[in-house]
Image (cartoon, rainbow, N blue to C red):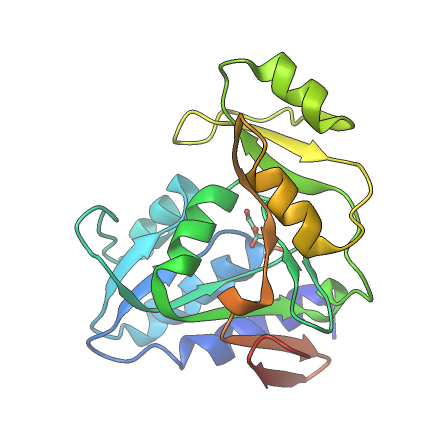
Length: 215
Ligand code: 5RP
């Protein structure tokens, strides 16, 4: 089975978790694109919020109604992809530059479900770690975070600069705390296991499902 087929399979599996009446957060990326297609076929009666303009536009084009995430104070379910997933449930996210909104949605939902193909499983996290930086004082922030380079992409929808930290990761919790405490860092793409409720991984024709963010 190809990686693309694994993405489609795991996305279709996750789409069945979406039930009438839920408030649902939609992640960003190519795996989530398959999720949108599956949801457009099933059409459950739910309220959606999107983690990026890309997802908003793709969902809308498929006929899904996406609400702004400004007055809904809690979601029931959010489904998103990941760039790397370790056996103990640490994630790197932000390959698509949507890490800040993705983390806000992950922190705002009852259940945060990660979907991935088998290439996303890693023994330990490797650089780069995506970061979103405040444009003010950018050069000084980059100096504090060295080695970090700005990605050649547009600003985030919130005006942040997307960059990639390329240094040692070491203990993810230590790096996550250090990045969070660095002035100028709006958010980073390290997602702690506590954020995630379930991880779904397609391996060939099977979907492996884990609880509690541990594989
Ligand atoms: C976007 C993300 C994506 O979920 C992550 O990059 C995985 O993407 P894909 O499903 O295309 O492999 O974090 O910011």
